[in-house]
Amino acid sequence: MNILLTTLNAKYIHTNLAIRYLKAYARPEFDPEIVEFTIKEPALNIVTELYQRKPDLVGFSCYIWNIEETIKVIQMLRAVSPKTKIVLGGPEVSYDVHYWLRRLDGLVDFIIMGEGEYSFKQLLRYVHEEIPLEEVPGIAYLKDGKMNIHPQPPKIDLRELPSPFRFEEDRDSISKRIQYIETSRGCPFSCQFCLSSIEIGVRYFDREKIKEDIRYLMANGAKTIKFVDRTFNISRRYAMDMFQFLIDEHVPGVVFQFEITADIMRPEVIQFLNDHAPAGLFRFEIGVQSTNDLTNELVKRKQNFEKLKRTVTMVKEGGKIDQHLDLIAGLPEEDYESFRKTFNDVFEMRPEELQLGFLKLLRGTGLRIESEKFGYTYVDIAPYEILSNNVLSFDDIIRIKQAEDVLEKYWNAHRMDGTVEYLVTEVFETPFDFFQNFGTFWEEKGWSRIGHQLEDLFTRLDEFLRTLPNVNLGIVHSLMKLDFLSKQQFHPRKLWWDERIPKEELKAINKKLIETPEIAGEEFVQMKVNEKELVKHSLIVPFNLDYEAYQIGKIVESDTYLFVFFRQGNSPYFATFPKSVIVTE
Image 1: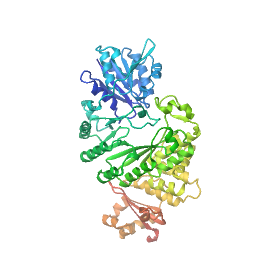
Image 2: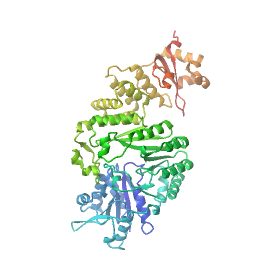
Image 3: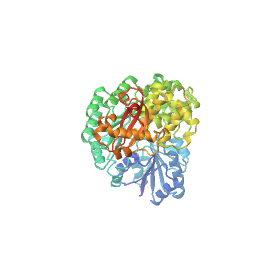
Image 4: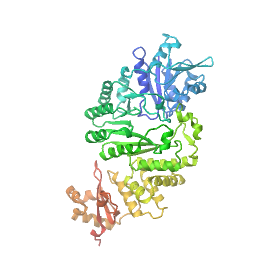
């Protein structure tokens, strides 16, 4: 029997862990072939490749980001290969099988609900005529127009599951893709917007087997290993053991990502990581979602924001671990002003990345079931994003999306951290007001519909700031120049600003730098730069800040030159000196 397991990943660098567990569990009696695609590939191309493999059965792993594209593939595959059995599984089709069976009538033979390893293997045994269909648990299907839903099997003992990482055909791609790993299944919390709340309790895999898998992935060149546990640190002893293992045995260059619940993380755990973890080894993803107490209560989300803030702050002060914090706009009773406060509460911690997402009413979640109670309107097709509710209008949603667009470009991309920090603290009333006002201006200009180069981000911010009263453009432009130049390894071919130093003045400055290099600092003196190197690798621009004061966190206006010397393979060298030291003839 020719069995294919497939999915449409969001990006090429992603890997699907679920179908690898299915393959590993089906062996040795069955040996499914794995073939992965992306949602960007034309459906006909995908169908062509599947068809040419002449499958007897194809299993599709379904999620909110790929279900609609998957359905297009299924429709074509059914037309060209009517005898091929088509099986769906995954979170998107597990919790509303009545809907999916009706919608996909004639296209799909079976839907596997929930945890699929045992059910899938039993289904293969049925297809192979080893057992009757009645003995296959956890499946749903139509027969003579009647829905049949089989009870789910007992939960698998995760300690006995075979490794999903040891397939020879995967070895060459391990270094090219993100590797996902799970050490537990289930979630101890009951957040009503999340599918993880449906499964009660947390079960763990065999710890030593997990460690062997991680060793194998690192030995084969894995660069990013992402733990998909819903709450990695629910067991402090378990988390500490894994942290210690990863610190002790990591391969240089590998990064481990975790979803953690920050308010239950003990200070001594964070201190241990601050003391012992190499910088850049770990990355934390933390779901904050909202700081509105009533909202959190309505979605059954327990969260102590003060403890969460303590964790995030301690981690940030340690300087070893980047943090990605999540917000969700559109939760119950969180109106525009409340969300503005939530944003500002979280941005105050200055996370390395702040993701502003929008509520999706996923099939099977409590919030979708109670959607009428809160007046939700939403798109009833994946990804089920809301349009409004009883306290948040569609106009509000549009405005927040505008803020999100600028947040991604100007904060999360870290293209001009110094400039943004000055604007959100000195120019605008709150950080959210900067992102919102600039985002609305961006949309009004039509920039969201066109592309941009790096320099465009600077010129567009400049254009926006020129429309505002009481903005010290001298300071802001200096910060923008500094941010722009700090990302360069070579003298940039194109500058975003128009102001240039006249040739004779520049010639005099270079002459002064060769004669008395100490005006650019002792470090520059030690470089022993000759005149040819100076002209080729340096840049001098008018500047309105005292750079030394800025380095210690102070904004001091000063009429100076900014001297930049570009060092290949290193960050640029910066110095400022007053214009008065240069005498032009």
